[in-house]
Amino acid sequence: MKKLVIFSFLITSISFSQSQDNSSPNVLWIYVDDMSDWLGCYGDNTVPTPNIDMLAEFGVRFNRAYMPAPVCSATRSALITGTMQTTYGLQDHRTMIKKPLPEEVISVPELFREAGYVTFNEEKTDYNFSYNYNDLFSPEFQRPAKTAVNGHLVGHDLSWLEQLKGKKFFGQIQLSGGKYEGETGSKYPANSRVEENKVTVPPQYPDNAVFRNAIARHYEQIAFCDSQVGAIIQALKEYNLWENTAVFFFTDHGCPLPRAKQHLYEEGVKVPLIVYWPDNNEYLLKAGKERDDIVSGIDISTSSLAIAGIEIPEFMEGKDLFAKNYGERDFVVSAKDRQGNAIDHARAIRTDNYIYIRNYMTDRPLFQPAYRDSYATFVNLRELYAEGELTPLQESFFEASDRSDEELYNIKNDPHQMNNLADKNGYKKLLKKYRRNLREWEMKTDDKGRYPDDIEELRKVYENAPERCVNPEYAVFREKH
Image 1 (cartoon, rainbow, N blue to C red):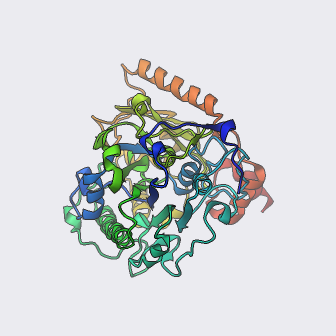
Image 2: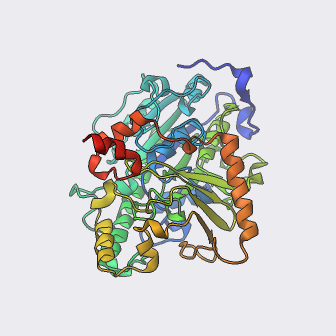
Image 3: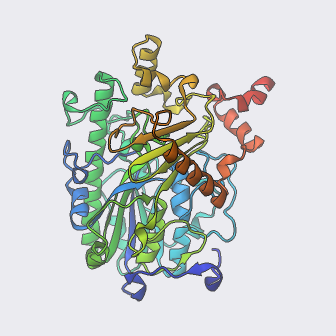
């Protein structure tokens, strides 16, 4: 484990929890894959979500939380380090040549271990850097057998939590969310308790049976996720861990719909975030039961440390959600870079009322060949595109000529980002401001996404799926084959 030189790079996080000694809480991340905030506590009662709603009712609900990336490995790399993935070159989804973190960068679980906590992760990691598992997570923790499939807890047997009785712990329990396949083994549950004719299809998609089916099944995934959350709560209570465990519930990005996951629109990076600490929930609630602050996913990392009374390293870029000065942030950034084989580079600035997206690679369409091409929604979109039955906006997903280098949307007036204001009169001053914000952020953090990918990295990507590697960066490899 890396040794911490406390006084050389740590600063004090001002919070109530720092006054605690042995009473410092456990911290549990309930970390969900590929799931949107279609929950009762966020105003969507299509399926019952009583357990997640309970966390929100008695805890703190954040209404505007944005992940640093619209894809899992980049987001997870950011949260485990408390920094934007772009700062240390962790931004490419499915990094093939993984390198260790810089010596000064200490991961969140390592910091908890230095503070005397048992750390565990059940079970997905998906970090874009190399590491020794036993440095991050306590080797003495007995990982449960056959409770997880594809890196996600799928059952309701949490008896393995009993080993944590009497110990301080920082843990992550990964839930399948939008990856829950159901008993059939299909990509989505075969059926849903939600009738397809009763769902609402967002206007950026065709309103047809395929999309209604996908949306209905995502609601079933959400309902199953809620039952898993209920099982976790019950187990924590059964083993006397509940009262002094601060629970963070959140998802790594939005649902699997075509313009959500892997893209910088609201449906791709806006996530549910709820924090509940039964024993000292009054401390959390001092900042408000419902929070409209603009939150970055990396704030989860720093806030977890602060609640436990652990000093926050200077290298971390997140903020303490419960610090008095939290509301000073004007915007958050989300970043899109290589998504598997699809090479792209885009950045988003999210403010109170607007989302600004800068697309640096307009020579390629929004939808590039990817592993999701076999999803029914993508198959349907391609068929409708070939038949000329899509709207102009939907057609633009496939056409590089229609991709703007800048996008600007008023979220209050245009929640589905249908009307790009970047080329409309009256927005020049606002665009200039957001360009400056983004440029300053890129320079301040030395955004590594600005630099070309290593040639050996691209070679391995190409060799992994040559049929999907259509970007010009892969031409050198195609010529050799």
